[in-house]
Image (cartoon, rainbow, N blue to C red; front, side, top):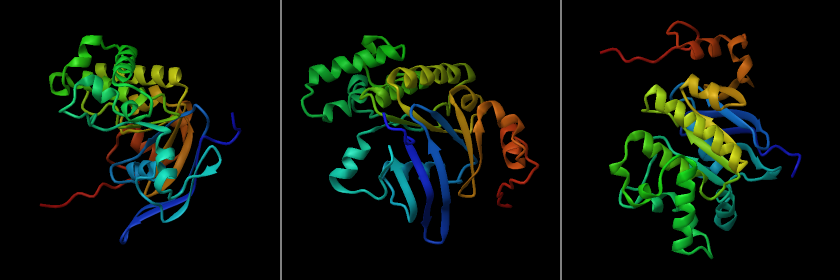
Length: 258
């Protein structure tokens, strides 16, 4: 195993026209570490993940995986890079036209040498790891509750045993009890797969549950990072306002007057 961080961002910048979304992100994520990125809507959290994945090119700075440059890849190099990742999308993003097992095995089925029968068996095994019975594999996503859909999405994220997993708002739309169930499953699955994880969330209960370390993104920069145990005494007024959900503070919400 390399001593280099699993993921290393140096000065990562991304703009869309005159809108500067990422203004120089510096972030290091260790092997098998779980880092949660917090911050308000529109601060660049999803754009950062897309730049790491190679779905968006960066304007400046670098992305390194295991110490190797992975900035602005293309072609087969990009395919190999993206094969290292699993992702749980906000809203689950399941394919309604495919049964659950096929959703879970979607990435597996694209790998050479894996038969449909083997892919289905792996999918059923992975569903079991998130607490879903084999019969769930043959039904369709629309027949599932929101919590079950999220479990299926988690199973899909881990089915190919990725090196890195991204979780995009994993508890959005769930009641507090189901959200805690999903948080517990994320911790369990990341540990069992042995993956490095980056999550983005507004949910501080989720952040405290799944993180080894928390970083706050504000106006395109990481303004604080540290262990989850230290976030309540960060000494940063932006962090303090965000984690306590206060309207008053240095973070000003843009509200359009009617």
